[in-house]
Image 1: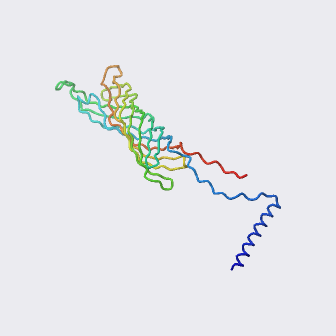
Image 2: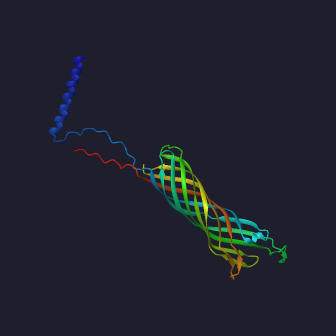
Image 3: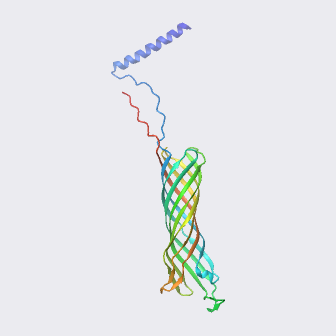
Length: 278
């Protein structure tokens, strides 16, 4: 057995020497020594910038004017149409399932529509209040807003680079009513409201999926429910310039938002330098 091992060792030395001599005869440099590949280093970091866009589908809780106090009004319809929104933010990822960020967004002009009707009366005074002729009101306007939120998220784990999460935020909503028009067809009336703006407490809840494209770039698809509060137009006057009422109140504006965003992480370790052999 010892003789066999000696013969194998001798053959190995002969083969290696022959290979080296052949390489030298051809003028080729000897192969470089094998070194382990450097461990991958994450280019991302705990801080991140984010940009996002989405489509808002708002809802209205109720509407109100001063005339509602003097007659029986029935609201037949109230609606705010869908519109796009865009935003940016900066955040911090603790690395322990928690993230925080501050975001600001502009929500584009949405068309507002509402209709009401009232039974009216004989045009005389009753219990000290005027009784109006029957009529309807058809309201149209644009709704525009700016929203700022401080948000917190809980990441629920990562599978194949996909991370589901939930979250919530609080902040403010600056909501405006622009170009209000009130048309009363039965009474041949048209009135116009001056623009009005209100700044409200706002809050939101999130649910989404994040996909890590690279260690530094993450795509984010999410749903958000947002509460923007109330807004009231300015005073409303007839087309002849006469005062009509103090303004139209649009109460409890909420929105179902679908959002697509990108997060870019920074503040991590630099990428390793390439290894060269001399």
